[in-house]
Amino acid sequence: MIWLVDGRSGAGKTTWARRMGAALGWPVAHLEDAYPGWGGLAAGSAAVAADMLDPARPGFRRWDWFARDFAGDWAGWVDLDPARPLIIEGCGAVTAANIAAARRFGEVWPIWVELDAATRHARAMARDEHFAGHWAMWAAQEDAHIAAHDPVGLAGWIVRPG
Image (tube, rainbow, N blue to C red):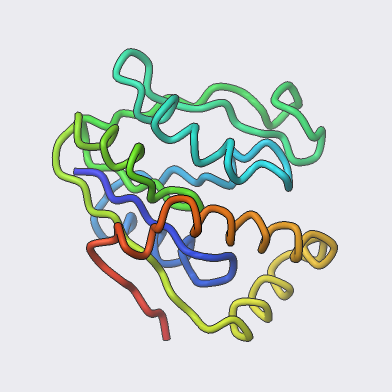
């Protein structure tokens, strides 16, 4: 079983996925670790089907946010085992291609995490002091992802954190 957890920044995807992963004993793969920088939402989304759920070698290249490349100290290949229960979370997780790739391994739950814009913005600014300068660019990428892939329409479940 694979859960694909999507939503806009600050909605609570990571917190919810971590809590569910801990409660169920499932690993959680974070797209934040796969985005190639602040302009990389589409590339991170594509990495779900192309890399994370690749039947031959499932996993992904971790992005080093400090070195700003895939070759820094924090970078490297992360192996995944989608034949076992797995949660993949991050903006861009829910697309038709990612759902199809996940289905190769069994049941898929596409999930959208929804929260109002003001609360999301406040949460995002509180958690990362460097995000303020990237908020508008990131939100534009989220808008493009939603317009191109309709993750809300594809989601079988909507989570609204309190």
